Amino acid sequence: MIQIKEVLETIEMVEKENLDVRTITLGISLLDCIDSDVDRLCEKIYEKIATRATGLVFAGETIERETGIPIVNKRISVTPIALVAGAACKTTEDYVKVAKYLDAAARVTGVNFLGGYSALVSKGMTPADRLLIESIPEALSETEYLCSSVNVGSTRTGIDMDAVRLLGEIIKKTAEATKDRDSVGCAKLVVFCNAPDDNPFMAGAFHGVSEGDAVINVGVSGPGVVLKALEQAKGRDFEYLSETIKRTAFKITRVGQFVAKRASELLDIPFGIVDLSLAPTPAVGDSVADILKSMGLEEPGAPGTTAALAILNDQVKKGGVMASSYGGGLSGAIIPVSEDRGMIEAVEKGSLTIEKLEAMTAVCSVGLDMIAIPGDTKASTISGIIADEMAIGMVNQKTTAVRVIPVVGKTVGDTVSFGGLLGSAPVMPVNGFSSEGFISR
Image (cartoon, rainbow, N blue to C red):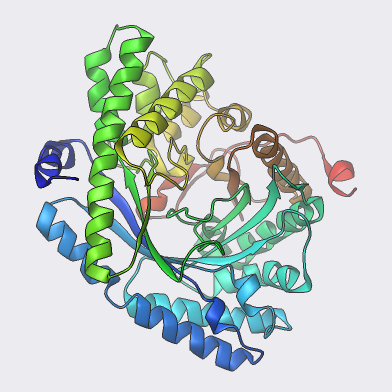
């Protein structure tokens, strides 16, 4: 049983080391909303979300007051909409209508984001899947809170290369549709391999079909806490380093489990999982890159970076498993470039490239995340980047993802600001040699 004294021991982490619960995410099944009429479908979706999530924000604020632990985001994830809306939506316009109702439901409940405008196409696309994917640019350009994801590969079934090719074009269209906001729509679109059903983090969260009617999942993050702990391990061997990371991850996970169970009590909704992902923010001292430097690297990207990240990820997972029987989601180290001040500095210094980031994704929790690239990057090149990352996930039996932003009108050397937790990013160069022939197969 978790005792309140365990939470009190973490107050210094909260006040001085940027510990926070990154998100309480309420997963909601929309399978019982399925209808052949698009208007009735939209009404059912809005009503169920508005009813089930009505107390979510209040519950988060109550826990913050009780514990002093910041809860940065309150979010909703729903059943992949391609499954829910297939019977009713016969055009991309129908899907956009559903997207707007989802956005309205997010607004009325007061949450930060709503995920699940998604399709699962690792083996093939139904007409409903294809329509939803084709609607993504318009849906993301006309909504504020909506996030979208497409799972195009899995270790079991391989990679749907038709979907990979299509997503390269969709990302370009999404960038163009939101070019007045530095193509920010692409920051709300993730392409996955082996997407988990219980991921609480955006933009990739959706409520898996194997889940119950509603569930509370919590994502807790503490790069600053790990960084502070590693100051004690300076000059020590790998065993001491690993044990320090593991013990720290244990403490962070216990905080997450306490918050998750309290939210479950307040909302009378079952508790699902705690996702211990070291998700950075643009704040000073809240950087995975700085952790890698504290492990002995001059800069992220230096030789040894992938090995250091593998140690970090492995020990974070082990510490989480020791602390909770409800670990899930991604749980490890996440390396979104725009959201990590240290990663941004490494790119600006030239030590970190997309190719090195790709190598690092073989051992981190997700993949190529929040990377700004030149706006004139070809769709086939983006598809090639997706294909490479999906192959890493498929072969290594892990989750990988791509969230790249081809910023219209920007080129290498420019910096783009997305605001809030999305941060800012230097536009990174991509390999200029063509993959058109390969992708067109």
